[in-house]
Image (cartoon, rainbow, N blue to C red; front, top):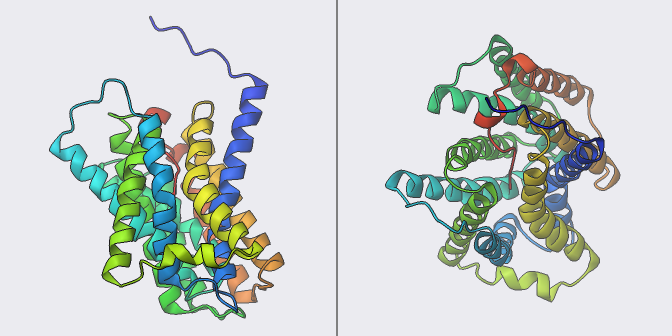
Length: 323
């Protein structure tokens, strides 16, 4: 009979919680960093931003894959190869490109509030693709989330939101949810950080290919020609080092001590809190009455999705990671 796991120490628990909250801040600051780099005089436009981010992140992912490569690499099946390609496409052209394009077309506060849709979307995809049972609370969360997103999109924003921008952010969240499903399957065969390194490498290469096709391979040189504080803070540190790599590593560390339900909840609420505070303090955005009401609907949807009855056991749940 397998002995019960040893109880987690208070120190390990605190370290894991802090790791999740720090990674949540990185995720929440994604749209704020993009908007700061688009502000006049702009350092990047949306296309040059995702191309530069992909190519600057490429060596980090390659090194991560090499250092976490298992000694006995499982035989690569056609199914796993397809999953790695799917995750690479969902990460690069999906989460990276769509988030950059969406942030360029809507307000940061809208982009942050729409993050509440990630857990419901992930639940819905897991139900369709992995045949996981949807609990009543998750079904209610999806319904309320759709209503809240529609309300938010139709509400007026003082910071220049748009229907196309909100649609791009929603598409970004859909690809993030699809990436989560792919990670869930690959983690059953390969070490989690190795999976991140491989799909990150594929996604970064795809972003570079898009840049070549659009004649924007000059984009990676922009940070070198604009070595100002804004570029270093938001591009080099936030988008490349902290968001692309640091967030994944911190989530992996936290998942060694905390169950996935706790990590998802802390990440979701933490990213929204950090993003809204930064949108006000850094960008000077203000929420209108309609946006506040819509945001409350989205937070209710998030809470319904993360109720304990609707959460999966740790061994079957996915890593809560994004670009």
